Structures are given as structure tokens and as C-alpha cells.
Image (cartoon, rainbow, N blue to C red; front, side, top):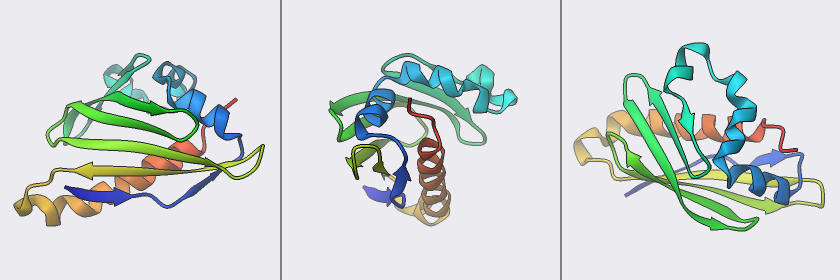
Length: 137
């Protein structure tokens, strides 16, 4: 398994608000307007899973497999060209601020590792950036 980690992101909301929003994927409805219009048909979610089409990769479906209140939400692929786990860790900084980091562990075949490592690291960083900009109210 190869591990990819985002940089630590500062969030201007209490860790309780961040956790509450990330641990229930139905909250993605609030950010649907940020999804590019050409991706909306392939953006589906419920409280425990999210599915999105990522050209040229294909459809990726993730399901929450573990919730640790105010600390971590872990996901596992249900559908993906390459199996991986993703988790979002969060920590309080103060009563009104927190920080977050996204980690992915992927089972990458040796022959593909050189080609996909850069794009995967970039993708993990983009996910963390997007999450850090959500209004967690």
C-alpha cells in the first residue's frame, strides 16, 4: 500500500461542526452548486456514500466504514479502478478553529506507481483544499 497525505489545512470552524458535516455525506447537498455542471449527472450521495465520475479514471464510489467522533472519518472504495482507503483526520485548534488532513492508502501495482503517484498526490491535496473551504455551519 502506498500512502498519500495532504498538507494540514486550517479551518475557521470548531472541530464539532467539521466532524458533523463530514460524517454525514448528505451534507454534500449544500456544496452541490460548486460541482461543475458537466459532473452533476455523475455526482450521487447519501448519508454514508458518495459516487462521482472522474475522467479518464471512471466511476469511483466511496463508503464510510468508520466514524470516530470529532477525530476521523474513514472511507473505503466500493467501486474504483484501483482499491484505496481515504480518511479525513481533524483536530481542534481552539474553540472556534480546527485543522484537517486527508490521507489515502492505495494498492497501486508496481508498474503503474510511477505514472499515478503524482496525480494521486495532487488529487489528495485538491480534496483537502476543497474540504477546507466548505462553510461548516
